[in-house]
Image (cartoon, rainbow, N blue to C red; front, side, top):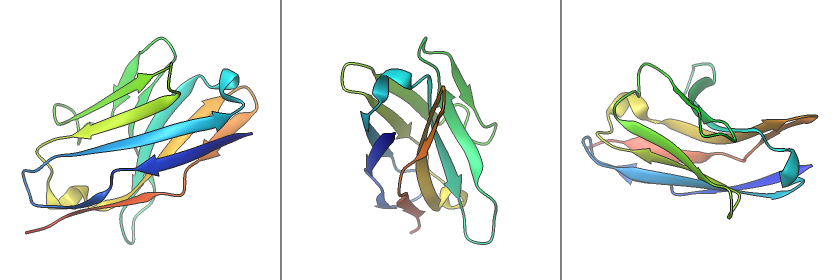
Length: 115
């Protein structure tokens, strides 16, 4: 099992920035892909960005050029740097890790973009 602890959400004005962090513990040697998903009220959960153990990244079209995912394997942590935030980025953001027999989710952190 892998446990995930997220941090970094909050309220920010349009155009602002936030950085989310997600620290993994437990069976971390099994982790391959680390990523972020989000779910806005009344909508399905959607992929934001993922990063593999070899640092290959994938982004949703809606965040390309604004968000950057990275990971620090020495700290078992994945980050999401969010710049130029827009009101439509408002959602609960969830950390996810995948690997052999692993598909774990964090508890979610609220990001609200509003003036």
